[in-house]
Image (cartoon, rainbow, N blue to C red; front, side, top):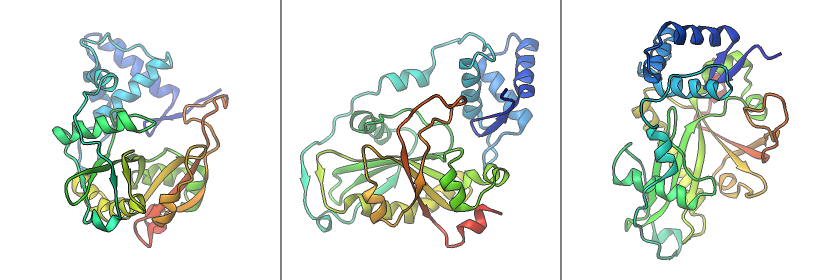
Length: 291
């Protein structure tokens, strides 16, 4: 019988669940936001800048409710996240074909986005419309990029978010045991979306964009979150893609997933096998990630 799981990067035991049930029973007037903030305070669950990880706590509570282990208070209003995920506003954009040498488009602009504004709305719409995985709101640390050419024409977008909780090939490559992985996972980020727009046909564009981001992202991450990252990862669905642009940009193929979901407690779920690619950002990344 399972006694411990990892949800939102935290080890959840029967005692953890019992304490949450106790909070709910003792405080029947609390809403969901009040409960998540209280958990963050009790666990001292904060990011590197000292802010409470409130959204991560809310997601953890929702997952426990879906598993029928707790019953949360009735929502006082509809979830704004659910609404945004269901309906992303269409944004007008130029779809005229772009076919040229990369040199004619340079210098490219690959810039991180603010969390609100017209560019963020455009970013969400492009991923939702043109990426096969679509787009959902991000929980946890993340950076979003729009890619444009020297004339301001749209070329693509990228999203970096939380690293996978565990991946055997990656962990072996780094030299991680479980405690070290749990301690140092925030120093990785996962390229969860990479989209070159379908009307763009430019040889070597994808690998060039990857190289640019690998150079600039560490500084952007430090500026936004106050801590470094030492390694990038991505998971490429084997039946759809070969990972050619990652290989061309110097990423290392270290293995593949087992075809199981992180929520596959009983080893009964089959999901697409994904090749794992890594890109070290420092020469001594192993020493830093194993410290």
